[in-house]
Length: 120
Image (cartoon, rainbow, N blue to C red; front, side):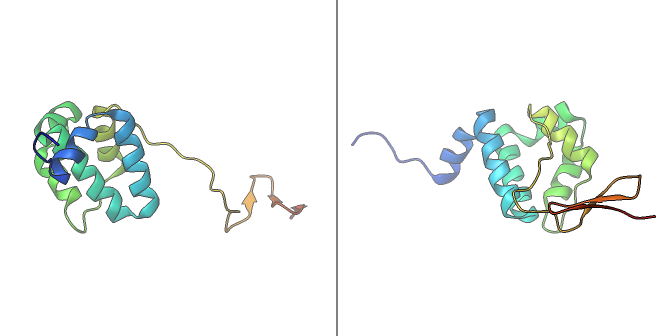
């Protein structure tokens, strides 16, 4: 065995240079929790250099650090700008479990998986 060992952080940062890896990493973190997602996003920004992402996204470094701090609550706008600078985007998809609330349309019709009903 030759060569030096690589720290976990170095290994992670090397992998986070690939957008496909970043997308999978952030998706897995988001499925876990909001705090896991923010930690993962911080790791991505560290790997990509926060200052460079701040310049590209037009979001100040200070704001990025604030939104990624414990208890940070990034706005959708800031998150979209940062993800765009990284070559990523947000998307919405259906859950694999039935919705907790019945779906309604503006016509007063209620749709669920078992039946459709109209209310007046």
